[in-house]
Image (cartoon, rainbow, N blue to C red):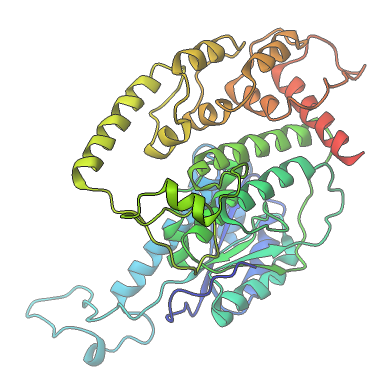
Length: 446
């Protein structure tokens, strides 16, 4: 677990379960019923993320609060929608006064002619529910998330992450797990055991400090980094939870490829938090000659989360000049084949990169469409010339999507994948990308 402790003495007294779900009509009812048996849970929210089956209807029949995305928006978006719905429900409960509401004790004097709900005088002492995120396919095992709830409500943990036992049929997750684990350790100094575990109980204070979320499957990596760097107490807790495991077939490999893509993107978003692991040790005498004695030095890298930090105060004039330089740099970066604007963090992460050279290398890749800013930040540190050769030589007729290039770039050190005889060539970009991930997984497991 991390070394930080709880930041507040006001702890939540109850928990809202949020279950993102897509096409889980066969399992969602059992998961909801099991989640309700968790002590401390008084609200269950299901976010139907673009299902084409009866997931919403079954969840409503099980008396869950249900909201539906018309189209699939991904796990992070479903989690955010669920948290928003919990907040809306709590606002309505406060306006209504709740079961313990007493007009004499809790409401303003009734105004003449007033017929609506009476306003509550002081609702600020009500701590929002904690959020417990569960997978929709956990069925009867969902109740085993109880230790996470106990840790948040009783121990003062701010984010409790489930340590799951080995799952039947699971295979080939090593690459994605190691990528996430090393990225979190580099950014925060803490090395999680199961960095991709999505079953988490989180206080609302912690949740709000982690917004906005990284998209897609990178949300767990981003949540962990953001919570730790904000000083919250993160703890992994064993829980006997079970869900369907990702197999080794083509569908499973594509799922892992998407996971890897999103984890890489999430880490690129947080790159400015990472320590430079290659920086040589500098003695105190040498360091004193490098720093202005009139300024307090910036911390060189991640430290314990409750350790005091001293920051350099930047004069207003210098800050304005720096902002102007950043804006000019952002305008230059806009010439790259990118689908959106670079944030301040992404602009800083690109540093002094040669934009013209980077632009030429990116455009030489056989890729259809523009890259996301996160992708460009990641690819800037890759050997793009080697990547271009790999993509051009691949037995693929169509052009790759940007996310395929990012995934393959993360495996440049691996050997070319073997094409199974059962797969006719040319392959689709998705098939080739999945084979690259599969080959890397097999190499790691040998």
